[in-house]
Length: 317
Image (tube, rainbow, N blue to C red):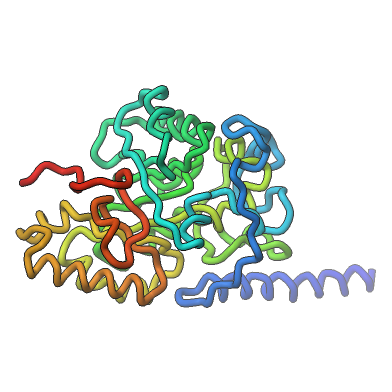
């Protein structure tokens, strides 16, 4: 009986201590842990792309605590690998559910931009596109309609390795983009890569697409991109990047960037705002994104559009 009481007392002490550790790590501004050395891979773990191998134990359940070795040790997002190597990455944009067209669109680009803000794609259609794109050896990014939990949860569960959030002009929107894309700690003995978020664990396609290591490596593979599209976003870019850990890419959304302010690329006011965003992003060590016809501008690495473009893809307005 005495031993049982001692064990219960020890457990009583251990539980609050563990909770305090989690709370401290998740507090705003908490320093991110250094990620373990990653192992870039050209194909998803499991070796067969889409439907190639089972997801985390439990029939493909994603989420914290899955198998696959040390958390944060595997990289299957080749866009991330190329950016870390200093390379530029280019894309095609898809607004239609045609899977054969999606396969063709993967040729000669690094990732596919699945457009859900300005299209009528359903989540079922987008999930099928993600699976098809991954099987073709390309990386699926999804522009969600809004930085909310439901949209980001569906995109990540479907297997997107990039979350693009439009019209980010508050610190709260920037924080939501990260916290809904990232899993929480998962397991204190093998914690997920920081920052830890609030993504829920549940049955999903992502583990089936990316393999058994997905669950404990989602946080270090899913990239979060915020789009700066209006003067309000420009005005607080430093605040967002100072206060929100986990933003990987910031995009000057060239079309709305002008329309929302009433000027156009090349005008003094447009160029002044672009310079503010560009300098802030680079000073914070983030990747800078824009339309592919900006490929020769200093600092830009991530592009909507194919290489060699001469226009931004939008009709003049």
